[in-house]
Image 1: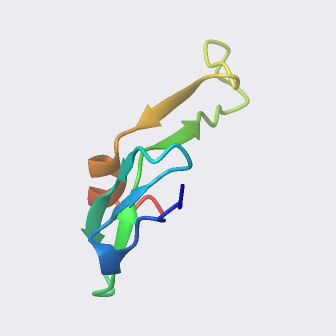
Image 2: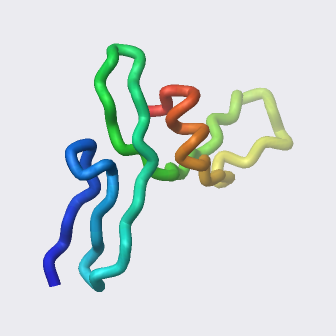
Length: 72
């Protein structure tokens, strides 16, 4: 069982420890380089005056959004 890390060289396709596919999104950064994007977990940042905002909240952001909005 070999782990293959997704990289730009292998078109962002790899395998994990269970030999299952690990496919990521190939993105072009604003500086012209490519990278492999995956979904990310972001936590909310609440202003001190907002009582209805919970600092324990979070959301998963899809890899296409990470790529399009440059959320590195």
